[in-house]
Image (cartoon, rainbow over all chains, first blue to last red):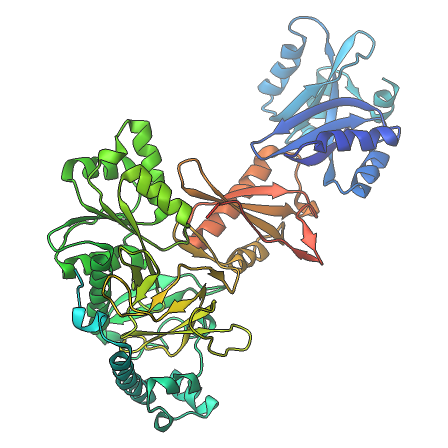
Length: 143
Length: 433
């Protein structure tokens, strides 16, 4: 089960991040998780929101370069070693993590971590086999 | 000292007679040898019988950089290839670069005019010169080399770069003369300061600086910092390279070797000759060159010309420092760059738009940097930084292979480059030249 992440290209110039999140706020879009990757010259804002399709449209209307990417949201036990346990499975199965980041909110008692894999389908199969819960679109909206 | 007093102090009337004889001979030569000029003359309805004196030069058609590019690589040569002794290459506006061929006589001429220039700037036989222009396809290094040998200097052919080694040679060999781009002289000063070298105590007394535009402010800075006299030398590869004109110690204009490079200043719109003192486009005719003869080559450099004799004793006319360009060529670290060259590269790369901007800045050390801002095409956007960085690197490599100069590429958002009346502002030159 994959969910959608929005990726937004941000030129390294004053106020650009503000303009992006401001546009989302005006359209009543709630950001569930967020990370920024940056190089010397530019940044990529990656977000998980409650209404990704609307968000994409809003951003494009405002002139942003944005795209959608499939990611996998995984429930991780909120205790020491919880994340390591999940990563060990990927490691053992030779699954490459491109990048990952965590949600602010928990789902019940579990933390939520989103992963971008080079092969999402294989990752999802391995997670299922190891009885690790993967969250869907509806569950993300409910957090 | 005046290297060739007989010629350089020739009065205007006798100079005109010499120029007339040489022009008549040039037209005769190309009418026999050059298919390109036979056609060009026929098209403009001029024959060699119409040329009786240098004043008739205005009857001849102009030659442009496009002519040179369109006849790449050797079609404009006036001699069989086996009689061409040396080839140099300079930037074209798009597509092919411009190739220039030198016969043995042309190389001798080049050495002669640079020897005159060096002397004009104050160098004397027996001096040691550090040539820190690039040696290679660029005409700066080898031109200064030949001229230095002709004048009887001791040449250190350092070429450009390796600044620490340049400074060691300066301190150990104690050359009196330096030749390089003015920005490199400033960069070396910065490096010297970092290394604790006392620049004022160094041996350079004369700097022969050219290949890029520079201001009186920069001259003062270089002179103050190195305790030397900074001299402006002018030239372009199409004509011969450096040595077309050079300042004397008076620094009131650059003495042009008008006996061999006939100067005209024209209005670039009407193409009419302008009176002395008016700023316009410099048009040059190398009267005696045989490897690649040219008529009325439009340099695109804006200057004015002064025919009055100079306090130094030379009677040769003087051109002003370059006041500007009639096209959008920019010069970065001595390399000529046309925005159209970059546009051509971008059009060939998937994922970019031909919307770009060139930002030129002068670094703290005086060395210029060129940043190319490129608008990213939406369909090429990736959420992965490494993909975008690789993309930037790829664009940079492609541009570098065309320009022969390191650039920094910065991806920017679509439509973020300022456009006025639909046309993007291509060049932001932050240098204070």
